Amino acid sequence: MTVLDFIQIILFFTLLIGLTPILGNFMYKVFTGSKHFMLPVFGWLERVTYKFSGINPDEETNWKSYTFSLLMFNLIGFIFVFLIQLFQAQLPLNPANLPNVSWHSAFNTSVSFMTNTNWQGYAGETTLSYFVQMIGLAVQNFVSAATGIAVLLALVRGLARKTTDHLGNFWTDLTRSTLYVLLPLSILFAVVLVGQGVVQNFKTYDTVQTIQGATQVIPQGPAASQIAIKQLGTNGGGFFNANSSHPFENPTPFSNFLELLAILLIPAALTYTYGKMVGSTRQGWTIFAAMLILLVVGLSISLYAEYSSNPIFGHLPLMEGKETRFGITNSILWSTSTSAASNGSVNAMHDSLSPLAGMVAMINLMLGEVIFGGVGAGLYGMVIFVILTVFIAGLMVGRSPEYLGKKIQKFEVQMAIIAVLAPNIVILLFAAWASVSSPGLSSLNNAGPHGLSEILYAYSSAAGNNGSAFAGLNANTVFYNLTLGFGMLIGRFGIIVPVLAIAGSMAGKKKTPSSAGTFHTDNWLFIGLLIAVILIVGGLTHFPALSFGPIVEHLQMNNGITF
Image (cartoon, rainbow, N blue to C red):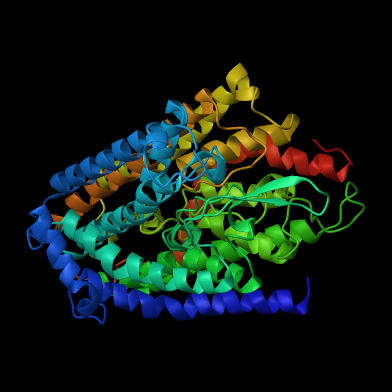
């Protein structure tokens, strides 16, 4: 690593930490209905939205009504995106005359973008028209991210309020998240990206002659607008097949740095918003610190693995599968951040990472995408682990566990366990099925432990609603499109429903005043306990599978054997 590499990493984390309270405080004002500088700009549109939809923004609901509204909204989004793919050839804005999408790929893509996963088993420029990209996928990029924020807001209200069953209004939370947070940031970011050279047009594809005299088709399209929200909304679905390694999506080192920062920007800032809304910014910074420590440790291990010598590559750094414009450090910083943040975009092929670096990315997924995680989703996933940590700590000291002055009881622990188990069941059961079945094995590009890693990563990505992949796996088959699609559904709503149930239960409880015996959840001791619980749960669940995948591959690589 060079001095410039270290400077860039330090600058990245400095900006992330510095922007967290600024954006977090703005979002606090937005979500609490306070005055903020974007109100004069989009306030009229918010009012028009409520009037057109017949929504009373001041009417609050209980957790069951909130959940029902959320599920129905997402179901409608799924159906719409599914249908426009099936009839793509008959719809406008299709200059490449792309045919209709197969039913199983359409199902997978509709589920993927509805659940904020944005897994893609196809090449965007050869499969989807501009109409589907904009009206279908880009819209879902906004509303799926806003859905994650809405769930978090309901949970925060459940923790902060007392003796009530009101958690807010899903439609109000969805609208404000979109209009005041996601839309303005995306517009600003898209303009910057266009200035850096990211394409934004409706041209037909260009056909050119290469230096060697061959003919090559150069795809075009409204990419910048989708790249902005795919990064900010922790979506990750690429407009082009090569995703953020494509020069039309990510043309310069500056665009690379900004897109990388955008991945973590909102998830990090929401921790500060969380602290403000529960009445203690220390609580928010505690969660932020736990996330940051896990991210930095994972990044350090990945960088060590990539820069370490190995006999297969003649003791040289691993550049295979990486974009030469960005190099190793930028590739690893991206792979660690995108897998930690449930983003899924890539600027290097994860299939080409060293076994340990690939394992770090995989572990980020397997831990439940709580290291910043998806917009809203990462934080409410982390609160699930906070509840488990408080419960375990309470048992250790013989006290009734409490969090933010409210007792953690049987129901909350049961819901937390369900939320933790749901994605892990998808990863282990579906990966086991794929690794012993003909449809699952026929899609592998590699044998041995690396082949198992490809399968494990795919289902970890689906269950964690991440969307990145070990690209050696051909997932655009009926088997993978369906199993990954159902895995995404379980990984998304198998957590959302228990979280909202916890929010409803906590909202109805009284608050207990703090005393000398209160277990504090805003200090370094709790940060250590929280990290330990996350790692123990993830380690005990997935270590056996990892042992047969990346760990064995790493040992074999050191002996000069590759797969």
